[in-house]
Image (tube, rainbow, N blue to C red; front, side, top):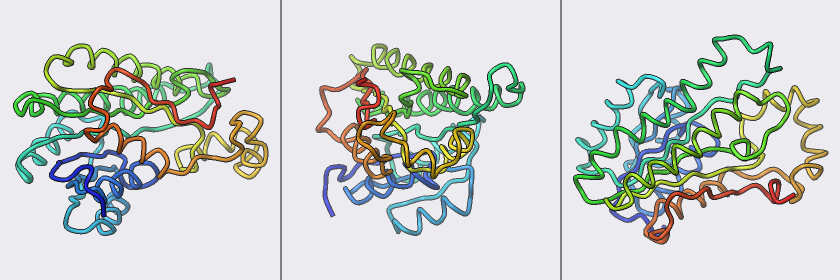
Length: 252
């Protein structure tokens, strides 16, 4: 057990699986108390059980601002403060752009863009009261470069990049930092539907060095370690940036 987040109170959305689960666990290992948020009750409760008393599971649809405000307020009521809010939850609903139905466009923007906005919006007043905090938002390499079948997703992730930069500038004098993490292809279920459109997951992993030069998918804990750095005081001079963790995908 480490102490890089000792005494800090954190929120992690999308904590039921993948990067969110790995991040919630890493935060707790480093001394944080963690509100674990996910739309799937069973998986987020499983994450909290893996952590123990330092975790509180919340079932929530982050596209609903009232639900986001409720878990944020309840986190502070439960633990007395809020130091880190990691807006990690998102959806990836691939498709041929002109065939994408309105409900997919709406769901992508509601979860990825609005959900991230809500998470930041409701955390900021508490951080202002206590004189600082860290906001972390999961974007993607697709917020920087595009890929086939991901036009709507890429648009949503590009919005998160600029949202994070704007928040950083608005609150930099108030002790609140805001950064984004841009993962490459990580071995997490959010990517599986896209993999099917590219010939299946086995094919993608067999040919992954054609687009991700490191030659393998990332592991969720590797992205969690990036989030841990941004959550900790070690990144006190880092705000308004995009931390790219993509096995050199965007270096090409």
